[in-house]
Image: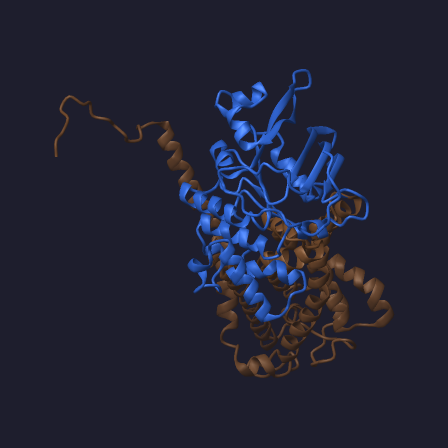
Length: 287
Length: 296
């Protein structure tokens, strides 16, 4: 977990590694968590998660339902704050700063760390206003600047050609895959440092899923991506590193707590996992 | 088209049985209940229209209220129309913003604190308070000290509208999907931003139609205005001081008169009031419909 001092700006690292080879270097640490446990009330949902997430990589969280993947993901941009009973113990560091330190504004955190949700959730506004929403709340008022941001974001999300002639129509009129790419464009419009994706393809068909996976590869040179997925093939296809979570059952109280079982480069996780449980999961014998 | 001869014929019809009979009975009972429910409604509309339609005219809506002894073709309900519009508008201006803000507090900010539950409970209690009590209350705390005025009537009507606006707005805010709020938060929006730019626009049509229904109800209230505006026959465009009048109050005053002309003018006022309520209901429908028609 020991990391050298890092500046907040992105350092010049070799960019765009080829998709089939995970980087062998250890890049800049974006997130470092140490013994993180997350509680809902008195219920311990996830326990003792320690991992580091590196810049310009795609990190996948996999594991069976109820293992706390999404909970950990939502801890990374303080979305769990919205649940009144949720509480985080342990250290979560983002570029060396403690995310849960007093005085840290969840709003400021979320401006740097964006999130794409499981179900596409465009606002009931026009396509243009959906993408311009983030820049606008950050104070951008100039029409020309907004136009440029909207076009750039929609291009990055590979949606521009499909919607450029109907930017004024409702975001709700798009198909599921388009709506999800709109949500990605909306997230990219605020130029975040990190994009968290919570099962972004689970509501989409294979073609739309493929588009979004291609998109992830295209944008990863500029962003750090963390993705939760139920689909192991997807994790194998897109990610550089994979974290496997599992569930610990307490027979006495019948509570289930998520644990991080193994975290490694994706090819190691799928080809020769160290933990039996990972082996069982990735070969489909469990979960 | 080949027919499989060895296949047994399947009977998919509902078997004749007690179950079928029960279904028939229930259907008939529901039709009867519907007809029974529609009868009083139809009679009210029929009576009001048949007795009031002949007297209604542009002149009736604007000219002054004559002495009761004069026949039906003289004068009109101008002062009452004016008073109804002014007093109801004033009540709306007071009650709707407060009601919507209270609903936003309850639903977005309050969480499950004591204050939230207290406001919600009090709103429920206020909904059940008879309107005449609201009139008495304003009479006791306002009219005794400052005299009769349209403003006092607006206070009473506002008190009646407030709980309805709070509860209907709260229901509408509850319907806004959590996913929309999350999407906004994830872009770094503050709570105020989320509420103003996402939650309120999404709930707006419901809030507006709920408020319009509250306005329509308040416009027709009689008991609370009797105590607070004194019901005069002269026009008083100054709602802030001096006795005033409304259609509902005039209906009450005219109905207790022995003169045929006054009674006819009362029916005219009743039809005018029904028409105003009808227009507000249609407006509420249009506002709701416009948004429901948009995709998803």
